[in-house]
Length: 149
View 1 (cartoon, one colour):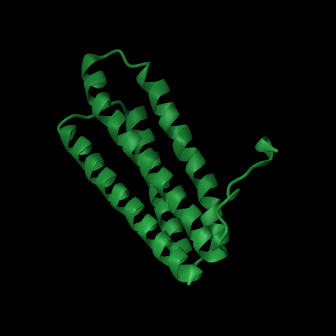
View 2: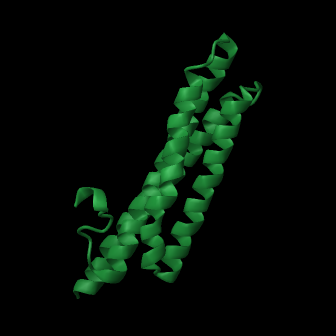
View 3: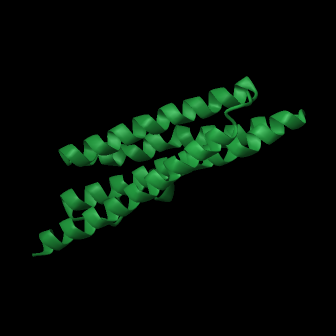
């Protein structure tokens, strides 16, 4: 009975995160469409593209972990998310260097897209946590690091 409840609760939680990720994907597409007629600075374009590629990798790993009930892979999602967070911060550092008004206008829409991508990866990490709980029955301390010890 407890396992059935854990399964139901976990799948509901995962479905909620997948829905949020889909909403963020739609918002990313809308932000991209608003800028389709303009070309922004290559550095920022490269950062968004790299971030998107890494998010795709995280999503693939998330689905594989869920499909295979792979706890080790689910726990690895935290590590896969770190470079995405780094690129998100790098985007803002590059944004601060812009001087052309047209570049700043373009980048303001891309800031949203970058944030949406970063949040999609965060939701994937949450799904990974729930996958590990589903398989092991343990939720507490899932992603503890040596830093907290």
